Amino acid sequence: MINTALTAAIASLCLIVPVFAEDAAPDDGGGRFTFSKIAEGFLRLDTQTGEVSVCNQRTVGWTCQAAPEDRAVLENEIARVRRENAALKKELLAHGLPLPAGIIPEPQIAPGGDRLRELDVDSDLDRVVAMVARMWHRILEAIARTEKQALPKS
Picture (cartoon, rainbow, N blue to C red):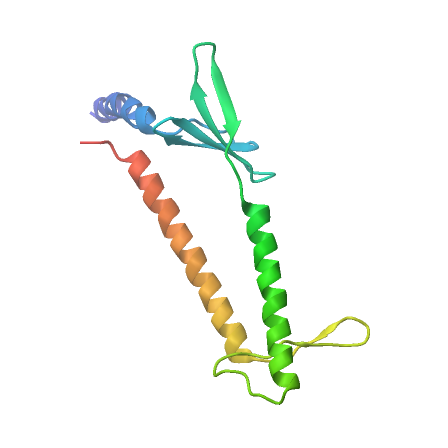
């Protein structure tokens, strides 16, 4: 009786596994690259460098082309805006004008170049809470993607 039930369970498992395998993304083997299915083929993420490529099948085989990246441009712009913001705050304070409500003055720089930071527990706590919330949402999104890939389409 137990052998029959075990045999039936194994047989049903053998019938179910191919259904899940058809919708699953290719196995990256925990290596350097991860792949995500898109309409044109696959997105390839290099987990070491962060580069993203679009891979699709051609008549000769598969090709991957690097996706355009504006990260350096964005980081340069962020740095420029931060410098400009710090200069504006410094200028306001130099003229004896108060900073607008909710604006925190730039940290002072000590003669050795180290930043002397005022302890602002509320600000630090808000940043930590925001970071944890972003991580939590990413985890939930990853779980949803995994469930979507694992559940059979009906």
